Structures are given as structure tokens and as C-alpha cells.
Length: 140
Image (cartoon, rainbow, N blue to C red; front, side, top):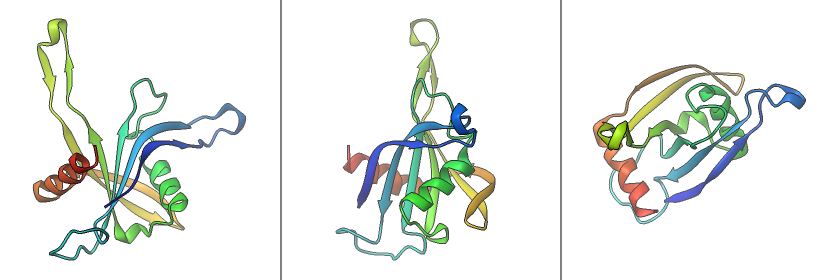
């Protein structure tokens, strides 16, 4: 079940200069809610973040900072969450001849004093990717 789908703005660490602040597309799904039946998930909260064109900061460059803020803002327990970065398909080049395929990456953090640090990226498991894509398509 979709519980949030909007542009998310995070505050940076630069005071008045707003260094490190930015925005991204944020979707939060809770697999423990709704009509889904079947397997219970140990980590039912799925957080999917995507860059917004024209943004000053990328989700990858601020992954830990964004994850820390999202877990605080939405009262999410980090050990019950899967953090996913979504990179939509991109077409580029003269006459759109080149394609960068859609990509989903899971990000694992070390949590220290409620802060996400030391992110590690890995391709998302194909089964989980299918669940995430299904959830995203249901809520377009």
C-alpha cells in the first residue's frame, strides 16, 4: 500500500547557504497494509527515491542524509525498511539513439545514533524489483 508519493525536500547542513539541501521524488510503500496476502515481509517498508531533473543535489550524493531525514520525518524504523534508489530509463544522443535502461539499486546503511552512514549500493534482487515495480505501477 502506498503511504506517500510526492516531492520530498530535505534540509542541508550548510545553514543559510543551504549546502547539501535538495529535493527528490519519494515514494513510501508499506507491504504490511492493504489487500496483499501471502508472505510476511521482515522489512515491509519500502522507500523508493528518484532524482528530479534540474535538482542541485543527487540522491546518490546525499543518500545517508536523505535516509536519516526520511526515517525521522515519517517515523520509520530503519531495521524495518528497504531503501531503494530508482533511476528511470533515459534516452540521449542525437535523435535519441542511445538508451540507459531503468535501474533499481538497494542501499544498505550502517545506522549510528539514528543516522544513516556508510552507504553500500547493490543491484536490487529481481524478486524485490518485481514487487517494487508492481507497487509503482499500481499507484501511477
